[in-house]
Length: 290
Image 1 (cartoon, one colour):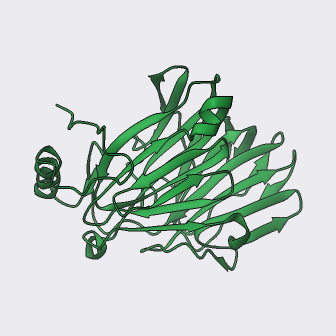
Image 2 (cartoon, rainbow, N blue to C red):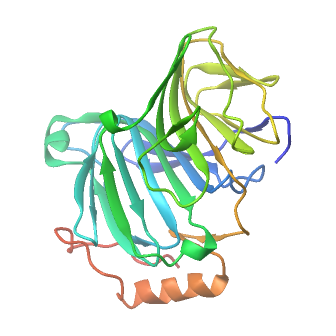
């Protein structure tokens, strides 16, 4: 990554029924930012009554996942037996480690009534030494997460450390992940302790080091310091970063690993149904892609 912020536009993927995501990481401009190796902007999607999202059970290895919502609700189930609804302001942090299976669906009440779904989904690569750790799932309510306030700025520290605060979410490498809301004209200095940084504008428009970013765009930057952000209009954004990864990662489908051989093993294990099932969601699964 360059010392000057670099723009990432991303690519829109239509998943049907009016539901789309914008894939921003990995990108040609940056395969990863700190330990973040995958970043999707979800929606906003409006589901009519009777409609919803159904991501059938599927596996992960070598990473931790978080879906952070601005609007809507998603029901998470996994092979550890976890059952939790993801709502705005709450953290459902799933560490896949050596292997986990989960599903993400619209809960019955939201499906009955209809809802707007808007947020981001992020994958964090585990350090090589922790890639085969036992899978875990942790839920944290909004009240547990540190708040950060500056003139015209209100932020919540979702994971990692920033601005002298530390999130209770268990992470394995230096990083930060924050949701930030800024009033028009407000400025914000970025945390200096993380040498790789990124900004994703979910709503609004900001300026960063000579770049003007609009909603759905991302910019990334690396170096000992970073230019401040300035909100051109009232804005909501995700601020993230961390220490450089301890080596490159291979990404294939839902798998992240340091070697291609580990990816092949995970593919064979899913094909042979050697992953544990998801209690309460055993009727369906996503087959291994060709």
